[in-house]
Length: 220
Image 1 (cartoon, rainbow, N blue to C red):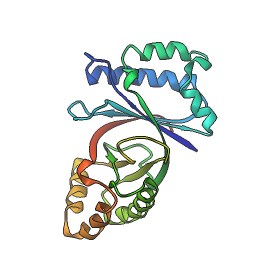
Image 2: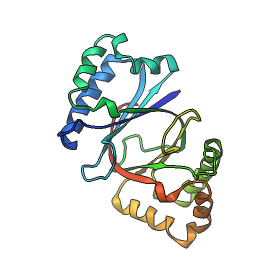
Image 3: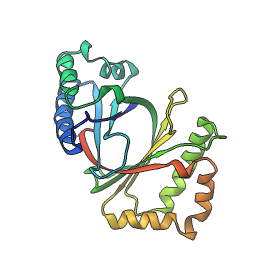
């Protein structure tokens, strides 16, 4: 399965709330017009979050050929009109796309969860993306064992050819804010000290950007 992630930004003068409403409507139409898309999840950045973009979209396809059709709406019925509608609420000059290798360490709840966090994680300067990816996969297994309050955990590893300020996107699910707080407290505790020292060797912790999102599953 091919997975692509898009980061989207609203038009100047548009609130995140209004952008979010229009993007949901747009997403429902996209699912209808592009049946080859096997999965589509929208992540709406919280209104108060300090992030350089407003939304993160996740798209799944059976092949790279089908994935490319998403980026060429003029090639499918209704695509051109949908793109024109998109231009009225989205700043396409700031849209960026990334192909990723998705690694599911803990399957997220089928019905979703009340709390979802997304974390953009850059590697240390002396570490290659391949080394980062290998270490992150290994650490992911340990994180799941150490942090039972985490109800779902998915890593998205940027492919070697992708150019970005980060190298991985982590998705974490929790049922309550108390579970999220327990997760954060455990990471900061002596119990996790050894594991976090390993993480610090390949992740630049000072540049991680965590955001809370509202997950909208349109097709899975």
